[in-house]
Length: 64
Image (cartoon, rainbow, N blue to C red; front, side):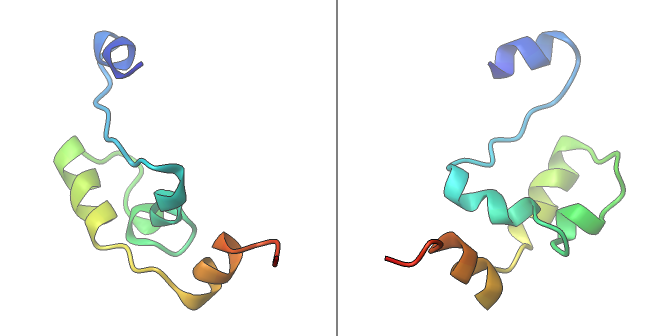
């Protein structure tokens, strides 16, 4: 799928697996950065994300 986005002129960044989606959650560096980031800037902001206790609790929802 990323090849299609590349053909349209968009840069793609792999933020997989889905369990890592907390990196783009509200309050994370990517969320608060400017809307238009280069690919390298986005990779850098994703790497600065920090998992919070509340994020971990949501990841384990619903309780067993």
